[in-house]
Length: 172
Image (tube, rainbow, N blue to C red):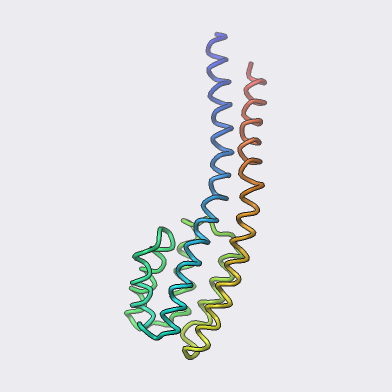
């Protein structure tokens, strides 16, 4: 009987640590996703500035060098733009679709959504300016996310392990 209680306490303690690690991992993934968005925006900015490719082709090309979920976002937007729909609508819909797979915070998605509202409405110079502004905002968000990660990762892991041990002690 005591061995069963000890085993159960051990399982609960490990589960608490794993739960804390899961929350800590979301902080790490947010920083990585923001890095991917910075790469996408920088490459898109250079394609817009030099006029090398139209938007669907540029997104298709850029997507090859990205990781999910940013890659799938760029691929889906590029594919849907082939149907000659408004980019603002496609951008918003795909951001909403990506939300479930993503670790981005609402403020990150807001900055990206505002960029989508500006795309397709102006000339090349205005697009470049909007991309530059979005890139700066995502850079600020990335720095904040990195700061939160530094504080939060250790906190969540410690909190999970402590909660798991506390529950385990109550079971004994």
